[in-house]
Length: 313
Image (cartoon, rainbow, N blue to C red):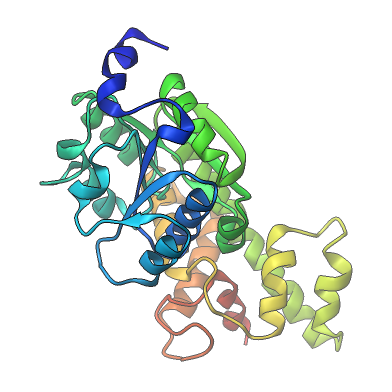
């Protein structure tokens, strides 16, 4: 461990897992499940949510964690701070804004953000926090609500090696595959690649169901038979059954996928024509997200990404 981290260890908290205080900021669908798993693993977890009274607070308390009314109260004394928020502005406000983590965390604290914000924003936040002797890791996840609940998430991490090693034992309580991908921004870069795979794969899943229906084949067979074949995928196995049942409740909300695809093109510097499949997926998601229906999980982007299938009806 470097001298810089050694000198601030007392201020940032113990390095032993059982003694660490973990702050978890953002108890939405994914954040709730991850924070609950950390608490169930016996870690000292203190949660905070920008909007008080959400179900995530009750779930964390029931799992043995704590909930603070103020960000300062949650972050004070924490060795590791996790954030799971929405867009770039949300993360910057919580981390860098007035009264945010940069003003309340002890020197040497490791801050890991699970949100998807793109590499440019991650590097900008990394540099801002480094100036305050705080260690930032961009650590976006994939695996959906199922992975969050089962602690089997894939966590893609960008940032320095030593803070990563400090946070790794905590990551292992919520994820199955944890990989440091390189310097700051690398985790976000890989997450955007992942979102392309998810978005474009959803086109193939929806079109396979559409073809099956047109040819008079039971849609259930698309999942039961093809999931184990060369065309199988996570989306077909996990979201295919929801499509069959017309269950569009969000595991990963369509509006969040649209945000992530926006970040893909923003980080491409205007070279959107090189990703035609991604552009088509974005258009199909927008078509469903802007519709006025009330099926499943609701309208205006609140449905899950499997709602793309509605664009084929």
